Image 1 (cartoon, rainbow, N blue to C red):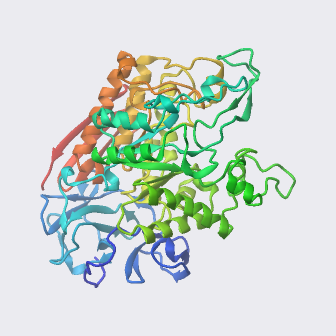
Image 2: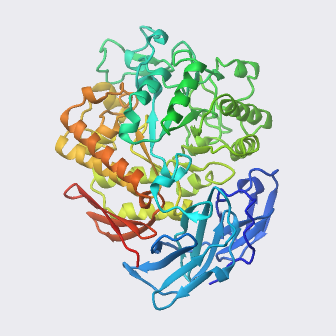
Image 3: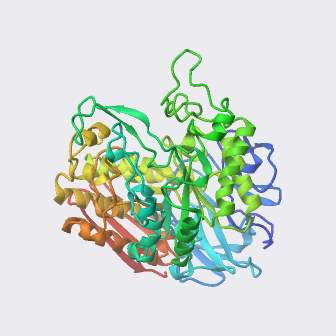
Length: 638
């Protein structure tokens, strides 16, 4: 065993600094990637390929080696005020192996002498210092053998004492979150006075405004909808002012189910992703006062609210863009091709459409402007963070600048940011740093669950992607485990077989009614997805309606108006009841929020795993073949 020799100084920031991943003999990084409250500079460090810490500007930062990753480390024993026990497990049994390890409270290493090993019991005991930080801090333990890097341990502390009961956690503890994704216009109409439609013959009603607004969300908070379901963080779609007229054009090559006489449709900006005035609430969604009321009401109910913020582009009607018409990236590539929808080939410059030019955020004055408008929303409103759109299309300097401004202007405010990136764990993880984003949605888990639950894939692939995510983002990451979103085919329709993942979801949604297919199979598969999202490491995120198995094809067929209890059939009500039960179980058991992940058994059809936290273990079993699940809770103190 090894460790650091410094003692705890309880005056430094306690939020854990994410580790450095060693990928070469010399690691090069931006100082603000790990210490965002400081001014930036480029750091170059020669580092051996082993677990270690580096001391940077008064903080200890863990460096993870480039070694194979393995689960196996877990806390155990009776919770105590001043000690934490943990052990290494292999094949369900304790295992003795020499480990190099580091333990940190906040961002300072503990002396290695505080970790003792009982060879007979094969148990490690860490004794905490007498002087510890006040308030919330975290104990972290990292371990490496000669061949593997093991999963890290994370234990929240309150006034230096390990938290052992979920009741001691609050909505400001990121791992406790259960997100609920709301498309504002399609959720609930709470104020008919702001209802407005384009009412153009060129715009089908399905892509016109439907009346959902901020007052509607507030009404559902007040009547207990979210409390009953158990969610405690609302992600609301963008609410800044969007254009009043129609844009875009979708030709109906195979007709459409709404009006066969129409050959195409244009679109309103009901979704909110075409900003014109970035610091103004869209009048069709409400007023600043109604947003204040929503936030105050949510916080009274112990619910966070994070705002979807668009930084990649502005609509061409934006006064800011019209004043600076050169702020966009080049829409023509050097070889003469149009630079549109080249999501990977030209991901930092490609345009989404002609009316929403991509901003050249690598230019400092543009980056300053767009980060300042994001800061405006935090300054003016009591928001709890952001969901960020199209992250991989935005250069890293934007995220560094935004986070630097946030921690400087709101140093004591608990703010959390999650992003949207489709791609490899390496690409997704390149944005997940202390000085950039707290998390991103884990689309690799999402697509794997589609393959396994809907297309006959092996449960072994679920374990594989969980391991890949833990290795890339940390074993106690807060990556989003999504049930779906406003861009994807509804999971229940895939699960029931009425549409397949390889179908053209948009065309299917435009031309026919996409339903559940085989209801007996579809709802049970959709429920298994929710069980996994709510019990695997990460933060679960439910897209509105997925809690009851809403159906539909691709955009816009996946964006129908939200339905509530009185409009649900028996299957939908039963699925919602079961999802609500599992959410409540997650919220009540600290092992499902901070528990260490230990695989128990995995084959093509069955996946069993434990989440364990200081003696409390939750065992989850998923059977893909007979569409069943079990969740068992037990306590082991020795």
